[in-house]
Length: 96
Image 1 (cartoon, helix red, strand yellow):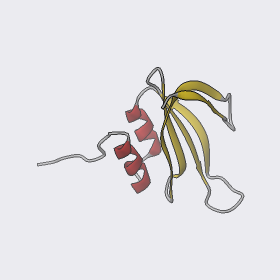
Image 2 (cartoon, one colour):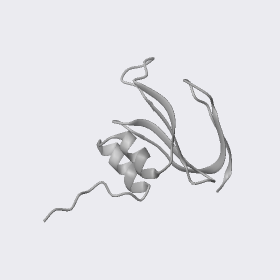
Image 3 (cartoon, helix red, strand yellow):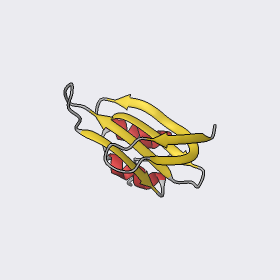
C-alpha cells in the first residue's frame, strides 16, 4: 500500500517520499531494519542496532538506487541475507 512517508534521519536531512514499507523487522546481527520502496523505484533503509542499553552501534538512514546496493550495504550476516531474500535477491553463489 502506497502512502506518504517521512523518515527521520538522526545524521542529516529527513527523507519524505511516497512509497510502501517492504521490511519492518529485527535481527540480532543487523538490529532493527525498515526498508521502503519509493514510487520512483528507489529504496530507503532505516537501521538501528544497539550492543548495550543507551548506546547505538548503528543508527542510519540511507537511500539506494537498487535493492542489490541496499543488500550489499547490509553485509553478509544471517539477518542481512534473510532481508535480501525477502527483497527477492539471492545471496547464494552456485558452483560446479
